[in-house]
Length: 154
Ligand SMILES: [Zn+2]
Image (cartoon, rainbow, N blue to C red; front, side, top):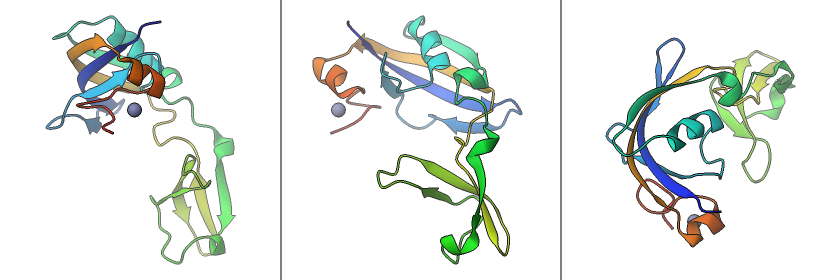
């Protein structure tokens, strides 16, 4: 199956209108279709757009980073953390650095950690503009990501 590499500029806001992320002043982000490089709700919309198209895409939490799960929040004895632990710090809980937890509260005895994605449970809005669309190369399909400007450079 042939995949495409789509480059786009974006501004990400949450339902309160706070800007969470933006490609302003940076290269457009390039991603390989069909490889889960970006959230599915956004990819679906971008696939139907052409170069130069602008659009505001609302993505419900379910199609973004999923709902927040209370069972991914836990209290852990404070002594398991470094002395300087504070709210907002992030730790990885496996050697590959894949699962990240965020510290959401610190008391004298316990540290509360949240393993949800920081954007879990958030309805997101993306203002996007497509800057380029091209066929993916065989290398990109083998690697599962886009190469070159805005993609993975290696
Ligand atoms: Zn690669």
